Each structure stands twice: as C-alpha cells, then as structure tokens.
Length: 110
Image 1 (cartoon, helix red, strand yellow):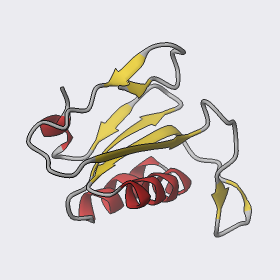
Image 2 (cartoon, helix red, strand yellow; image 1 turned 180 degrees about the horizontal axis):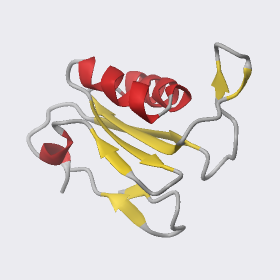
Image 3 (tube, helix red, strand yellow; image 1 turned 180 degrees about the vertical axis):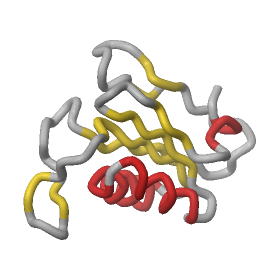
C-alpha cells in the first residue's frame, strides 16, 4: 500500500506485483519527515507543488533515487521525465490533492 500523505492512516493506492519477476516501490515526500529533500540546483529544501512521489521500478535503489529526483522537479517536469524512463511507473500527489500518474501505472495497481 502507498500511504496517502494528505490523509494519515489512509491509502492512496495499492501496487500489485502480479506478473513481475522484479518489482520495487519507493516513495519520497514530506508527510513523514517534513521538508528534507534538497533541490540540487539551489542547495535548499525542494519547494514544489508535490507532497509525494511513488515510483515503481525493477530495482529499489533506482526507484528511490527517481522518486526523490522527481519530487525536487515538481509535478509537471517530473511526470514528463518519469514517462521517459523505461520500466518505470509513478504516482504523484500534489499539495492541492491532485493525483497524476504515468501512463502504465494502472497496470500495476491492485
């Protein structure tokens, strides 16, 4: 389950590993640890429209890296970038409670 950052105790989605030989899920955001993600362009806390980015990929290390990088980009740039990565799907949640997803994410939801 992917925790809903705007509704403590709630789920935003459930990811299914059905049919996958390798699958990892990583989330980066502000819900649990506050403003801890640094924007490498400024060296300061990343201030974007996002509250969480969840990435589904074959390897955990990359899923975590891509979720953190995407968070620092903001929703529009992040979604386009994540769509360009092979074998990667993502769920982005904005502070305005908008949910944005990569095109193939629906196939991974249970």
